[in-house]
Length: 170
View 1 (cartoon, rainbow, N blue to C red):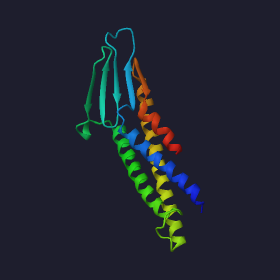
View 2: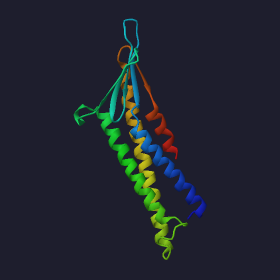
View 3: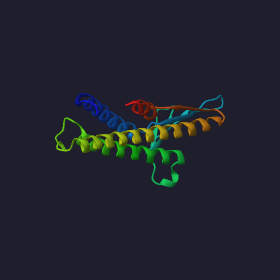
View 4: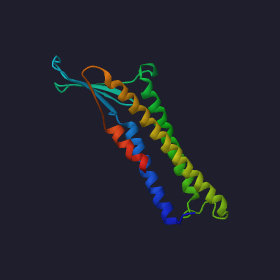
């Protein structure tokens, strides 16, 4: 197994990953759609997040609406929301389990083999949470790319999806 310093570094990186995962899940700006063309009088930008959708007009007015029902949420957003929550939960549980298995803690100090297995179990939970994060982002991006075929529609990815990609690396 790794020495205590490497375990502590991994634990700190996993903690930062959990904080970033919570922040990116909570952000309202995952995807922006706008219509561009010669016939448009008032430009509108539509922000879609996991929890609400907003419309920003060129006049500066911003209107946000929280998703009231699961039926009004697009399928890709529902799936991304569920996977991000599950990844957050697994990462949090992984942090608790990994803390027990670290060499710098005194939990299970009388049984080294069991302590190593607990540390590995925490690491496996981190990897599973990481794969859930990557899959949810990939699925949302594929659906966003598929929607680009509409006339005069421009779509960009925003903070939520940009902040979630580096978390995969942590």
